[in-house]
Image (cartoon, rainbow, N blue to C red; front, side, top):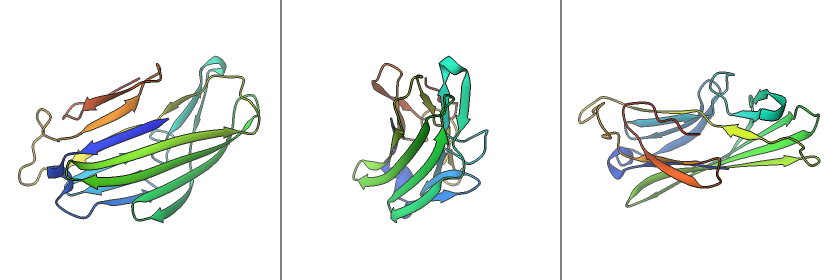
Length: 169
């Protein structure tokens, strides 16, 4: 699974970007006046594993967080599927910056102790806020940037960020 967030140069250039884990907010990425939070650490905002056939949802809470360097974060979890299969989960978050802006990329891997017999869906809730200081606006796509999310079909699609909710499958 892959999650990609891109901020325009105007959003990301104001200050050194920071990537960190926060026990109350999850993964926090701050660049200039923009802050992205995703995959929190409560049942309401955590990454969730869904097993549709079993009608079971498992939140991923309390990861082992390791900062591998200032632009990379590794989060590891150990959970069990509804049919008793132990799952090792890794979330690798990395930041890259170039003249086009800043990208935050998350790769998500699930390693089962034995083959899974149920389908698995992954939900990663996120929010993006921007300080309404000088030049800030809450209308249209003035937040700048986009989010690229995986689709159930196996493809990915980019969505512009705006003042309204961005929801994908």
